[in-house]
Length: 381
Image (tube, rainbow, N blue to C red):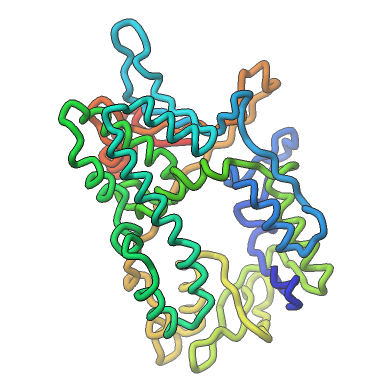
């Protein structure tokens, strides 16, 4: 949090509740059900990260680890896995407790694909190990960073990190025995089973992101803020305001103002909601509303000017990376206790794969025609 570093922060939130994807809401007048706006879990270290962000001596919010009585906090289910010979060959559920358990589970299920599993683990671990160095280099100017990235970043990063998961996993499994083809499809589906957390379909998502969710998340485990995700922004708001800053809600920004060099200097508020007030920034302007909205706000301020915002701020059609996938979230209120409803503290991820269908083709088919696929082939959490 910039307030901890001595800056006076002003937060402008267009919504009526601060917190973005961490805010919670009630439906209509019904206060019996409280729904989060999207956060389903974080990693346990978020407790220390939030504490540092607030400059607090003790964690302002506790994060409880997820998991049922067996420690399982994720289940990846392949919708097309079959039951044969009167018994369950495999339920289709891959339980995840931690990284060590996951590695052993994959070995137990796919003994004929041990070389492929080891190669995946080796490459995934390699790109994940490179990431801290890649992040640290962002602390230096781009002119220096560009040289350092090319000279000290390991070759495995450049060779694999940005390739698609489909491309890399197809390469990894190319030498698998023909008798293991169905198991290859299932293994690939399990490794990509948490793709929704990346925001991008498995046939488009980078291998680095799949490595992060398939091995990185189990390494850390899942956790959830005690009291709900709304406790996180509330702690940050308290810190900002205690340091002399302000947090405004129902305060939509209409334009991001820039000087002749393209540097952001302030914002102009919505004419309708805030009277078009202009706020000048002493140090900087930070936009946290996504690239599309940021570009729109910059473009609003310059569309009447002779200079094109694209010259210093690339337009949407100039971006090499397309928009990620969108999702529909359904919140359902159910009366009953956890024990009565037989619920567990674990996420279930049904994925369209198995029985000859790869997760890449299954998700691709759904995105191409969401209403044309069977219900069991809809990826969800």
